[in-house]
Length: 108
Image (cartoon, rainbow, N blue to C red; front, top):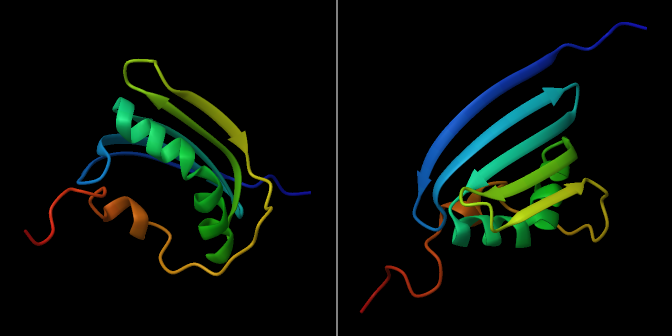
C-alpha cells in the first residue's frame, strides 16, 4: 500500500470572537489533525464547539482525526478524537468563528 503524504500548515489569526488563534493543521488523505492555541476565552469557546467543528469538516468531506485546544496560559486543555455523533446539516465550516461573541458589536 502506498504511504499517503501529509500536508502541514501553521496559521495565526486574529478573530473578533476568539482573539488570537494559533492553529497547526495536518491533513493526511481525508483526515485532519488540528492543534489549536488561543487566549483563555477563545480556547474555552473552541473547546465547547469541538463537536460542531467535527460535523462541519465531515460535511466538507474531511474527518477530524483529532482536535486539541489549549489556552496560551495553560488554563484550558482539551483533546478529542473525531467520532461523528449527532450529524446535522451545517452552513460554513468557519462561520461561527468569524462572528463576534454575543454582546460584541451590532446595533446600539
